[in-house]
Length: 221
Image 1 (cartoon, helix red, strand yellow):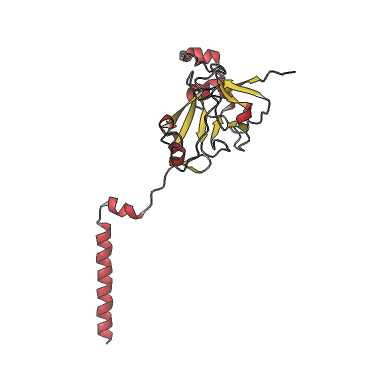
Image 2: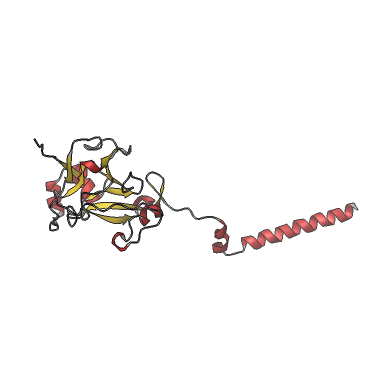
């Protein structure tokens, strides 16, 4: 009886060893199927594919079903980056001209895609009524009525001043997948946009103060 038990134990052990060796010899692609893929992360622990789906093919209706749909800007502002709806010509300068025009911080942010430290910029806690414009070319970018406190330490807006005010570009830097926001007139780097903002658009345009200037709203009697 003891001899039979020993033989059975050895047989089971041999079978387990053969199965383990067979699993290890399978192609790596087959073994990887058992491990779920983990997508990249962006600021705020948002799933990167969700952020990209919200902005891919904006004019072609290619938004992801799970992404909130941004409301269109008013018709009076559509068509360009100016209040009158007229699209300004592109602004192009040499690197030397940009350096001469901008402060060192403004140059690093707008021309080199740097990011200022949170809670340090001029406009993160700014509440005056008016319009935020591109510091490099003066194009109107965001109205104060769309600004909200995101708690991030950067000025945040739920939509641009007009449909053509900003352009959006996929950004794969620093091991993340994000949507970069630039001034559509001079290609100045402004910040990034994320699909975790308030209603009505559900978007958060997270912008560097160094990329902005401010024009107060005219007082009316």
